Length: 109
Length: 110
Image 1 (cartoon, chains in turn yellow, cyan):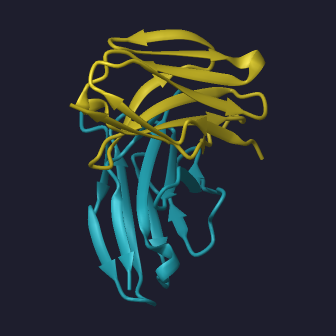
Image 2 (cartoon, helix red, strand yellow; image 1 turned 60 degrees about the vertical axis):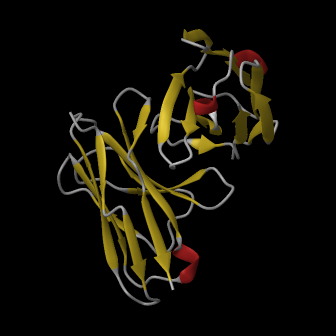
Image 3 (cartoon, one colour; image 1 turned 180 degrees about the horizontal axis):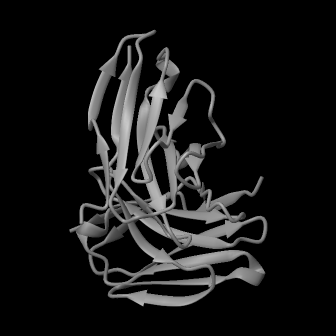
């Protein structure tokens, strides 16, 4: 099956810093989503982005499907950005998501 | 519009007991999914459904059964719980590829 690799596995940021999270996948995908799992365990949809670039406030994402990677940018980080960021992809028409292992982000005041 | 809801939020079982987790969605989505998340890992697909009355196996289906008798509900059953099934269980639904997740059920099997 498809392999989804996220880097870095851990990231510690000072409030106000910018960062880039990466997601590499080993095969063509139909679909790619980024999620934020907050410290209470809730999964929050950030982006549905099989290709192209999207922005939502301080977050933006870019997927280059032909080169099999996606990037999530966090600008001017805040303590509320702490948590785990997951990339997940689908390769079929049933929408079954294959998750990466996540990037644990800690933003310190 | 509640989105995706899960019942219960927490549960503790003894080995060999059975239970059913309920997932409900009010978005009229065709597709529904059950995932489990173990510590330090991403989610893994247990079973999924592409419509009322249909179910299919995912990546880790052993020890679980599912039913989709109504479009808005997707049930996950454990017939004889084992400690290896201690996990957080997430339900999701989707219409046009983007999936939306419920708040999760934390299950501990002693």
